Amino acid sequence: QVSCPQPLASAWNQPCVTSCGDSRAVLYPPPVVITFPGPILSSCPQESVIGSSAPAAIEGSLGYGAAPGYRKVFAYGAAQQGRVS
Image (cartoon, rainbow, N blue to C red):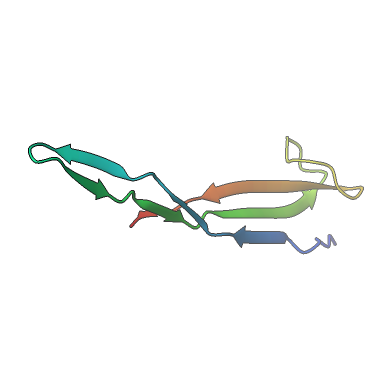
């Protein structure tokens, strides 16, 4: 009988906000300056790390070694969803 350790799951995200500089247009005549505010870009990138273990009898490149008799499998991914306001 084989007992497997609990899978590892870890996820996190953090807000990211940045802005671009303003744009200006000069109209003639008479000279008038119009300022267009730059856009504010915001997103919440999310990164996840998921892992599990498999018996060492399963051959192949399953990832990094763990406890004797087991190999760990890790998957890493990042997803971003952007919004312009």
